[in-house]
Image 1 (cartoon, rainbow, N blue to C red):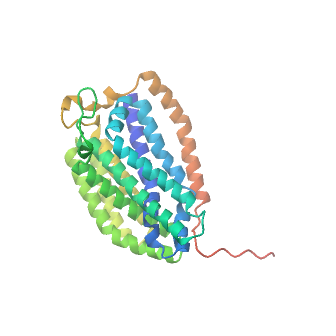
Image 2: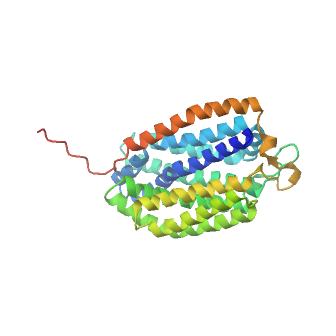
Image 3: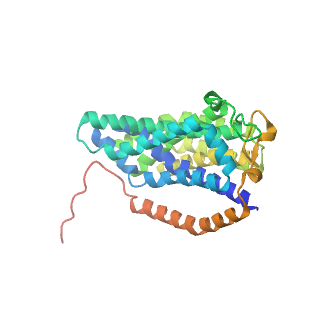
Length: 335
């Protein structure tokens, strides 16, 4: 396997990992006002992702940085085409992060209500727009032979991109609801259960429809087909296990999200960005990659650091694995 292919795979893994991990954070942020009827219950929902949301968001930074270093032509063309959309994504992510920090600074209903609103809006807008951008890779954008985007903002709203964005948003919502059933207790957990049972129908149907559309647009490679089968199986498992088994339902939502995103990249290969106006201008893995020396250095860095990051994140989830409850724990009596 050549280094450009290795790094295309790594980039796909980073984007997939981002949606699997940050997906339930987005879901919790979007749903916290609905699963909690008062401020205490909403804080329980927010505290469930408090120790991990910023670490999960790092996957997005690493995915973008990897594209910049390994495929500069891909990065330049795609990110310049999505310029206005990326500004909106950055605003959503910034407002979302600020909401986590500022919400508890003032003990007032209007203050906390305002930051809850911005947290909800940012958590909805970010996965929707990022999903649209990923869908545009496979659906195609008007790119000329110089790698320049020749369209307008409206051209970014491809039917497949919009469908993928909505699908990933709804999957993130049910993913977040199932995370709350695992990490909270009491009223919030019960409300998350009810929310997940409502969302399982549109989530499963949208995931299956997105899989069929991806199959129609992709090159139908063996890996892409296998991932689409996994996505459909995950969607069916999601529909079945929600309300029956919390752990299995959360695993099913994670599999569905991951396989949906990974299948887009697998179906895209050997291209990285399809040109909808000039097939000869389509960017490919080989044509958009950096030089051998740069990819070699990056590979050694990834081999050393990636396991460390995975171990650290796994340790973080283990440390903060206890359920969050609105009832404070009673102090232990001395023997």
